[in-house]
Length: 175
Image 1 (cartoon, rainbow, N blue to C red):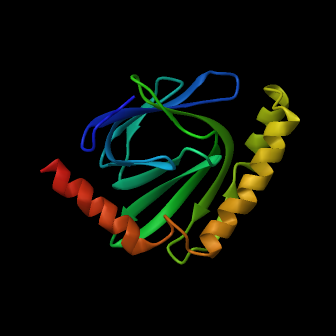
Image 2: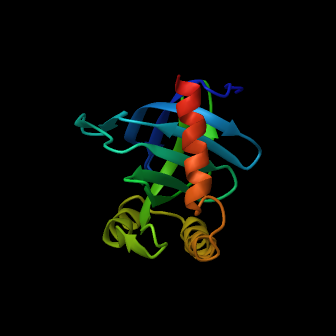
């Protein structure tokens, strides 16, 4: 699928059992290469699997990796950048949407790059309910270590100026 820079796309996250988890209605493609798909949005509608919906409050730039089992959403508020990292399958982009499987575990990263692991209980419940294969559990454990290392080393996208540059590109394409 060859989407063009500046085009909008929908994002679908699924659970391991193939059920739809969440839909983001509107994201603009800023970059696509062999490693990553970068999108941005501002006040976009998010629809939960229950049908409940809400709108994002802050603008964000999202980094969907094609070879890593996580994605990173950089959230911009009051000139600061925080990050929400989802452990999930490598991303797929097709004619319908950006797609990935959400594996529950998340990292919330503050602007000082300190972080906290979230949803461990949810992960434990779902790995039993949905019978995550041992291989997937092993991959996720390794990717959590890799993600923490990326944060500690301030590697892409964990750099405020890097994120703000992508956000400014989004604003210029939006005009």
